[in-house]
Amino acid sequence: MHPLLNGLLFGLLLCILIGPVFFALIQNSIEKGFWSGFFMAIGVALSDVFYIVITYFGVSQLVESENFKMWLGGVGGVIMLVFGLFYLFKSVPKTTVMKNTNGGKHGFKQILKGFFLNGVNPFVLFFWIGIMSKVSIDFEYTSNQAFAFFTALVGTVFIVDVLKSYFATKLREIVTARFMRIMNRTVGVALILFALRLLNFLLEGFGIQLFA
Image 1 (cartoon, rainbow, N blue to C red):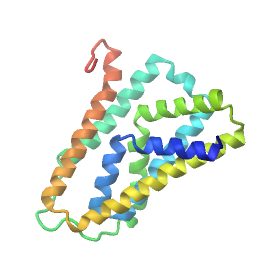
Image 2: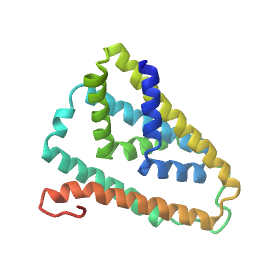
Image 3: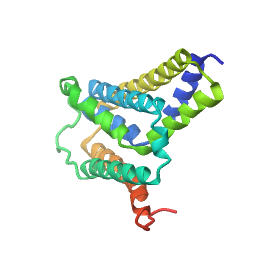
Image 4: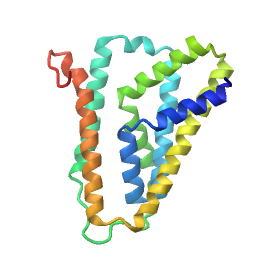
């Protein structure tokens, strides 16, 4: 199968995996508008590219270290926990929430938010290591073929994330303050659950296990 088509298929596979970024992107787009979600999607894509580059140059060897997994999970868990608590206790004005704000003026902030929210999740790194192994061992792609594959993959994920943001903004007309409170708490709880799963890596190193 052609590398571009393979990349498209793997990109679609990644798109249907629901993680913390999925919830945050939808919430961000509904509250702050399309451009806010668009720039956040750019940050997510840059984070994916960063992981692709470092896995390409052999960081997968580090992940075989239990200490690396433990501390990466701990750091990622703490950062994601902070995000989760922020959303959980975030206040929503009683007046109409969905104003047509210019999310684009905070573009760099949203890029950083997307980059770190995606980047601190060790499961993202593990995913890319698995994909890199598939490309190197199973597909046996050349450098040019691998470039085409990952370009198609990241491009597909980015386009789908932008579409998520676009259609999420269409909900703004019917969104109420009560809905946003529920949305914020849903995102907060989801991020906290993901954070606890990551912190489990750190706690296991000290003989404590939150999850089986």
